[in-house]
Amino acid sequence: MRNLENKVIYQIYPKSFKDTTGNGYGDIQGIIEKLDYLQDLGVDYIWLSPCCKSPQNDNGYDISDYMQIDELFGTNDDYENLIKEAKKRNIKVMMDLVLNHTSSEHIWFKKALEKDEKYYNYYIWRDKPNNIKSMFGGSAWSYSEEVGKYYLRLFDKTQPDLNWENEEVRKDLYKMINYWINKGVEGFRLDVIDLIGKEPDKMILGKGPKFYEYLKELNNNTFKDKLLTVGECWGSSIEESYKMCNKDGLTQAFHFTYQCLTNKDGDKWNQTKLDLSKLCSILDTWENEYKGIEAIVMNNHDLPRLISLWLNDKEYRKESAKLLITLFGLLKGNLYIYQGEEIGMTNAYFDNIDDYIDVETLNKYNELKEKNISEDKIMDIIKLISRDNARVPMQWDNIENAGFTKGKPWLKINKNYKEINVAKDINSIDSIFNYYKNIIKYRKENYSKIDSKAIFKTDGKILTMEKDKFILYANFSDQNININYKGNILFKNYNNIKENILRAYEVLVFSK
Ligand code: TEU
Image 1 (cartoon, rainbow, N blue to C red):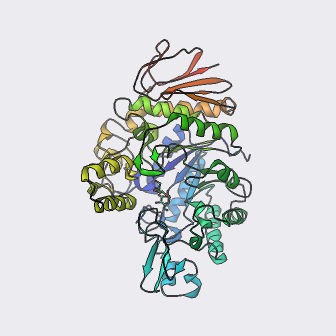
Image 2: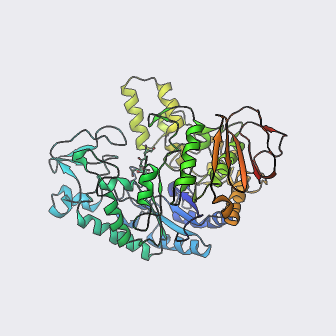
Image 3: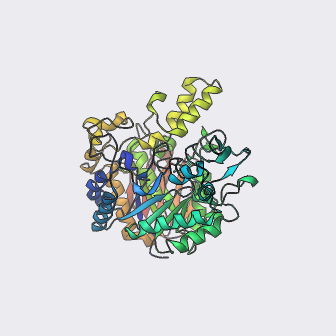
């Protein structure tokens, strides 16, 4: 493997990371200011969610100019300065590539609306829509009065899908990627990359017939198997992920199998209880069968905070956060950390729909209102699942606006910032931050002990993971449970250990 294994990648949502101008939005200068903090944590890469020019209808995943950094975040020079400053700290920059669609504000789409033949064929037009649904609710087809046809948009109506069958589209995208590689970007996260092979007339969306061919061409014209690339491929099986992760494709893929475990029948708006036996089976497959590099990820900008979804983010918040990073931090592959999880940030749980901004959330709210579901019932699921939960500003301090901005934050600050913030955690020896640092340090110094066969077991409350050199016990329940354990303690998430008892949300790791 191209020594791209056992890396720690820290995902930054630039809009919510650190504002240095007082306009209420995070910016690139703010990231530069926090590079020492990230170096102290021990990260190898920073993955920035998109900063290119965008009308922000989908917070930057609707790009109107791939070559221009949006002034909301700064300038192209700022981005190049970030790459330089990060490099000084042995941190590489990973760019978020949105290749499946552009913004409707992109010049290509504007020309398409003017019926410019070349750019008309950059998108997917039909006289009549079929019943493909958008990921954000409703039909995936929108009618253009200017063109007199429908265009495909698997996300928001302002995010028209690109026509990857058109070689001109692919060439323009490769040119753009190489521009950023030449600027010093050394990694790429590829947004919904499995959708580029779609065949809408056959109702094929993910991993279509030409997907692997496009992936090979993309890789051979840009990354050339030298850079760390991770594809976002919701619901990919181990076989599909394995098939796309090789020298002709990606380094690794986000499959989101375990993160979606509590989605009832695949519907995240319909939650069910965490089934530890299913978690064990997924982890067993990824740890023992998958030959590629697993992308270990608990949180991101689209998911509710995992300690809020799976465990107890109130009375046992610290124990819960440490339990999860102990289990996931001792898995093989690359470890992805989403901003704020290293200090145990939780869901924001905003009570009022007016406090939400996410297009997916607002569409879901309106859809459920139309079904005459009560406001309380709708808000209960939105408070748990909305993507805005993970997008609230980073909590740096206990001062106004959590030290994120001197202006009015674009999205409300989580009201628990006075108790949960970086300044407090950095200075507390048994904090979640310092626990994350220790897990990351252990990975760097003992990866051979992690990179071994794993045996997973569970009784429905306690999950055990046994590797050659250590055994982990994690109590996912709020009860005290008797167990027999022995060995030298390697990690614990309480200040002490109790003889043969595993307490609520307690995790213990013993070296063998
Ligand atoms: O996400 C793809 C996607 O399908 C999820 O965002 C969606 O919310 C799903 O329900 C998972 O909860 C990528 C980006 O990560 C996301 O932020 C963008 O909104 C989307 O693509 C469109 O670019």
